[in-house]
Length: 350
Image (cartoon, rainbow, N blue to C red; front, top):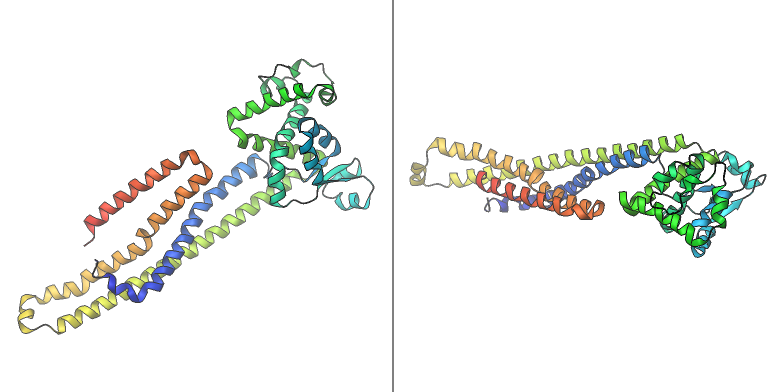
């Protein structure tokens, strides 16, 4: 096999291009499950709300949020929002998107760039979840035992029609922190910070519903947009796969052509004694069947052997990104598979 490698030199550029396309194919194959996960987790479970930072909220919600956020963080949050009063030109411009703006003041996010969202989400997530939890407890006091089972202050015993936010505002900050910590511990127990922020997206959705936002449209738009991206990635993967197959066929056919030419030239220079050592059937077999097997093996080399380590390393990288504690499982599986493939090829290939 080593002697045959020199016949691949004219096809080095095609081999490099094929490997580059294999990287594209592997990345697309590994990315598609992520988008499917987004459709399920964000599109269906979270209603299309990706982050725990509302683009708009009622003024009362901002006031309630301030009960559970340090003063420094409050200033940071308020710096990124602007207050829109009813019956103003800006309110008229926003009434189609946020119908409630014509009835009461709302805060609107000034800049919804990813950098701003990344900055605000850790500051707002826990507070929004607390506000949402208190609102649910006001509607059904029995939920207090489920949401805050470890709290010393039992909100389920508060008399009906009590304004819990007004009551919390009169409490010492230490008591509010205790209630907040109880809810945080509940979510830490089931999934940590990630679970807390995912739960906070429900608070964002509830706030959008209160503002009159069409949340069903947000969900449908997210699912359709993510599905369209999946189709695009699948198309890219298909094009890459077809292109790799074409390049592999070109490389293998060119290699087989050059090998047959070299073999024929070698045979034509045989002396009479050398012709007597090889039968005609043997020479025909060498020039046809054996070279065809090499051609097939070359196609497999380009399409599968190069692809295996690429997809394996890519899987480890994705595992590190998604679940650092489980990366070793994927790494072990990749090492075992590479070992098995190496043994099989060393035995079966000439």
